[in-house]
Length: 158
Image 1 (cartoon, rainbow, N blue to C red):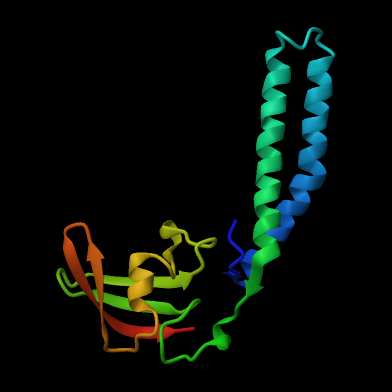
Image 2 (image 1 turned 90 degrees about the horizontal axis):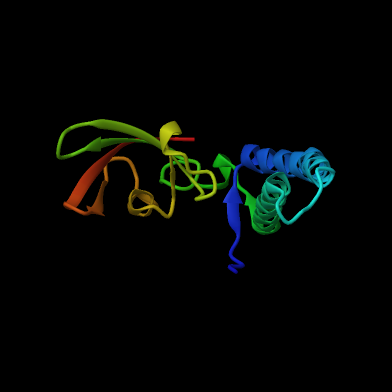
């Protein structure tokens, strides 16, 4: 298991703490209720409800353990922790794809917070790694399956 820190925004840290609280209180209580109800149905060897509840319990505990491990390694970061003129974690970056002139906008986040649908990409993704440390006007070259793609950095915001 890795011991490297996981960098999270305060918002994501709060979300994980809330989820952990919800799972350890209400989630565990609900699973215990389901297991007790399934036990009351009789023979456990051929009790599909019991098996399903036990499997659900295992998945719940797995999620709890994952969140606890993440929180144990979590370090909060804020946009002001890094220079505003370079691309770092939590930077909002406007890019221009040099091949097709498409305009893109991403926020660089930790792998834990990455969500492509919300335009949040991980700093350790190929594009994220190519952008780190760059300034406005620089070109970030990203290796893709079809070769390479160049992105011009148009703006960096915090």
